[in-house]
Image (cartoon, rainbow, N blue to C red; front, side, top):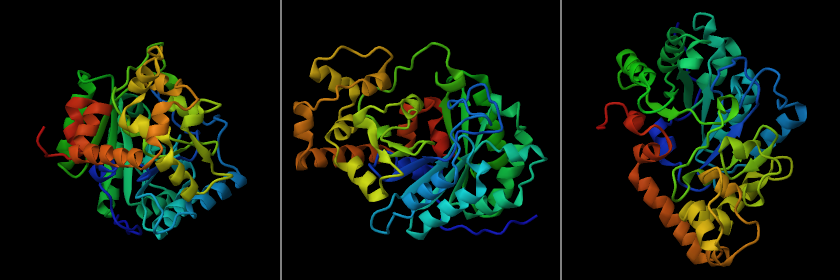
Length: 361
């Protein structure tokens, strides 16, 4: 079967990750917490009983927020996630078209629950996928117990045939996990360099919580660059799952709510917040040390969440033109290092080169 492409301009995984350090260059939108799968490592602990699933009001709010983009003020890329965003193919399609109308490009990450029927793609989901500029699928040992690798490969082949850029998000226990070595080799054997891969490690959040803490990458935080819309409509300056789930949100990480704020407002807060500039350029560990605070129990991200609410001398220094310039220079430096360097820091380092299959290790 030949699929008809209905989307806009493709964006490759390496392009998306290349933009990741740039403040407000992207927007992450978690459409729902619900998911038909029950993968043991799920960072959001999603299920079909999860409470946060958009009703009519939330749908209107999401569409209004995305329609507040303009060609002059828009994210370069919008990433639709969940839970499982393709439980809402109609909403995902409308958001995609609204974003593309302003020049933004849209990617969606799916667990491919629908592929369990011999890799078939239902018509409403097919319409959404072929409208996208990029389609990502999850592949890991827990997923393979629910959706077979063969079915995942069938879907990816069909989407590639439709002319849509694709990628895989693989997750393992760490660099020495034999599953990662075997699975990445299988992907390359099946698709050559046509399917880039983002390889990550299981984090101690959601159903994967096991009492351990994650130390974090240290140094400046590139993950404070893109706003994240949580399933309840809160907009945060962080995609860390513990932060996304935490209520109330630490004031320095809260950017607003889609019921009250539009994209230009969220973008301005992202760019102009002195505290976020400092997190992006110095990092939470250095900020805590400069304020005289003790190292935070729980590591890097916990330390960021626990930063003092009251502004300090560093915040005042970062509020002006010099702070903006430092933020811009830091983002430019990280972008110049390339997407593989970003993944060596935030993902599973030995597999970072697979963001561009066939590139040197």
